[in-house]
Length: 134
Length: 151
Image (tube, rainbow over all chains, first blue to last red; front, side, top):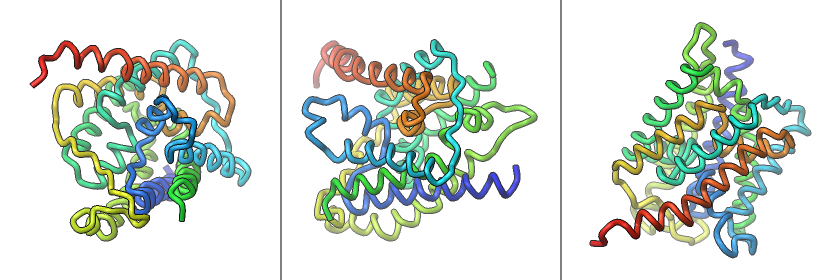
């Protein structure tokens, strides 16, 4: 771990915090990506709620980063593993009503005990799972 | 400024943050989640950077509005989660989410952002996640609500 890898992590993280704080301050909404994605499944969602604009912005921001020279990483996950991971992440985030962004940033950032517990549990389960299989 | 435009701009900043922080790279995420001699702590700095901005912004700019007008700067209501319960559903959901995250190193934010890469595993992850969310919202949750005696 060198300064060259710490600085992008810190700067990128700060942008995530800035985005979530600005969204809440200006529009009153929580920047929880699992909730935003799930809301796009609701009827009439394509007529343009804020979630669609935020999700579109994320794709645009990702594209701008690529144009600015940030490399796109290679995702070498076998397809059956991607299916299992997607299903678990999808159901788990709905049951817990949040994911890394909603509980991990916005919830912990509001010092919500519910989010602190959720984040501790999913971190612990993720560490155990990853350490066992990788 | 219009709320949709603000949401778009915040989404752009979030997508930039995803890319710059390295959260979009499952190798970084799994390097953090896998305890080994080559442990990669960078994810802790992503989280630290995010909270270093969000916590003071919340305490100084947002919380006073929560306590007073309960409205955001655009006049819309501040929609903070009302649910404070730490119950079996939260713990089970967080556990399933954690296992899924530990399996592939992809959570919803990076999964969405990385769709631009066009890589098959990312699209398969994202579509599976959407299908599971749909199944949960339309089938599992209504069923569990119907079988529970209402108060």
